[in-house]
Image (tube, rainbow, N blue to C red; front, top):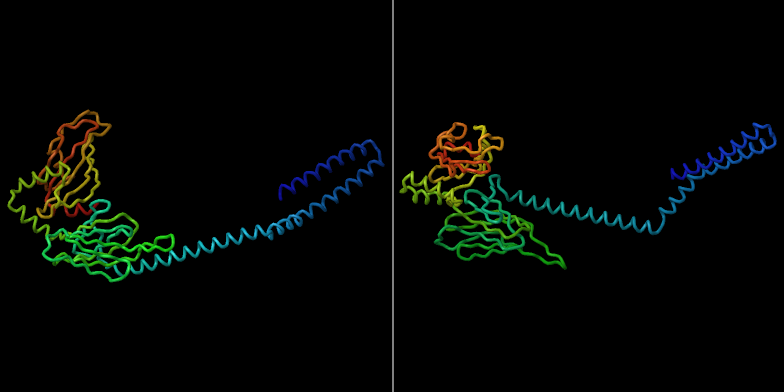
Length: 357
């Protein structure tokens, strides 16, 4: 519209200019008759163009009205409104469903509930001390395993409602959520379920949250009993021999099964040429020990091309307070290489440090 008005004004201006030029030339040379005619023509043209400019908004408004009430435009608008209403309705329904699931879950979960200990992406460990929240597969069969030697058959207590199937076989419990087919669509369970699994006298409380993930395996372990059994097994082994076994197991990449893994990420800037980073701790509750793992390398800006490492280099107070043992897998370290240093300490010394990261 603005462009159209601009073109109209430009045309008017050009006409005015041409007439004015002619008018000026004739009047300059004293031709009064022509001068008068040109003057009248100029006035008429000016008046006519002003009338046209006044009518432009009205004409444009009519075009807009015609377009607005066009059947095709109305149809498109109705379809847009319908899609908008359906989208808003679906969004509201999803919100209501999420609120209902959250409400049920909130009522089920006690304040002291915990997450399971991960073994891999789809395998976890559950202890009997507290209620554990486990994300289970809503599409596949989930497996729970009692790791104890059982004297009695496994028992499982859960709400007898539609949507959940539980079967036992030996030390295994299989949990499956029902999938409902409605027309061409599949509806998956979303409501959490409470499971109380009894492995002999030990009860494991689990809240299973169905999600569209691969099948999950859950190992039910009584840590207190495991520690007691481990203490009985290692109390006859000399302390020095036990330390050697721990060091060998960690360097071979096969930590003892009773070791509790704690991820750590802490750097120590003690030596100008060395980059020292603590990456993991392995807690041995039965022995009251902690094995700390360090990765050591030469800095790029180090002047020396190689450095000889000694155990005493890592007995600094900035690293350890009361070490039991220090081991190094590479005594001569060159640029581009890495050395693994193990420091074994008493657990009570490390307790605060373990949970400070």
